[in-house]
Amino acid sequence: TGGTCLFVPVDSRVPKILVETLQIQQLLDKRVIVAIDGWPIQSGLPRGHYVKTLGTIGDRDTETAVLLVEHDIEEANWSDAVLACLPPEHPPTEEEIAGRVDLRKTRVIFSIDPPGCKDIDDALQLDA
Image (cartoon, rainbow, N blue to C red; front, side, top):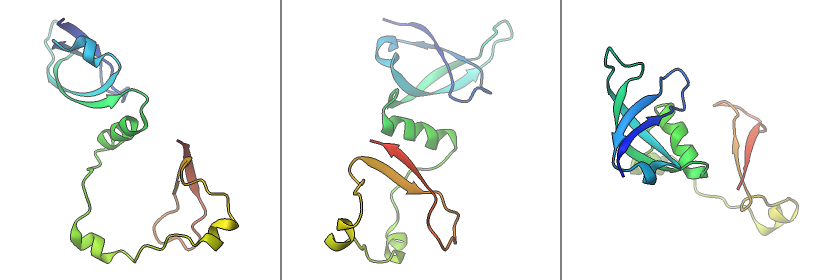
């Protein structure tokens, strides 16, 4: 069934947006992108339209996509020229793994050290 939905942006500086849609039930638990079309003078809220669905609220890939959109970060495959600049892949040896706790399949861990840092020791972790 159709009707008017109130979309709440992730960025609290952006007002809630009224959108007429026929997809209310399909969008209830989704993160979506909407565009503001106008703000009628007699309305307390702007009007907009549905652009696309990013995914289900709370899903890790969906929330990652939200962050990329929110910060205007393009998500694209690396070009062949960029990939050619990378050093060869060096997976850890069995000997290296034996002396460590292997978290590769249970957590997402990435460095937050600044570019050019000599001691890569600051990281964030997300539980999978």
